[in-house]
Length: 223
Image (cartoon, rainbow, N blue to C red; front, side, top):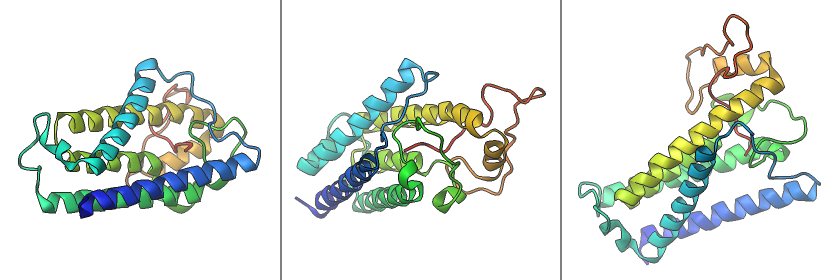
């Protein structure tokens, strides 16, 4: 096992322990950590999230076991077996884990896999003061990091389908957040970037009637 495989194993263990401890903490308070899935989320969006997340984990674990997977399925030669690229990928993955931990800490008891059943406050503190979707951003970075470790057709497919699925989830949850928080949500998404800090003011209005079914196509995730 080389330094990259060992580092990925340690990171995966850290991520797993943080997730499990968060779920247990919420469960002990009598709250459902799963939440409710939005009915407007279509089947393809749901399948892409499940498939890409499973593929990401499988590729991650397989690389830890056998790093030669990066040489299979039409590898991108310019990225494959380059030490600098692998160090960059490792920094990206550890950065993603840092973002996930900070986001989970900011959410606290409000953390859910889907939207919460109960009434909650709009989270605008901590990392959510700068970006609306840090958990999803972390997933994007994981997929990029794993692709750089495994720069082949399967790694690329996983990254593309994951970005599509989670971005669709974000847009779906935006409608629920608008229904829950109304103008507070509109004001929040005007001033805070979807995935990255920004100084741009977003036009999140609902048209002339103010009741568009897709106000501000972005959201704070519930996980």
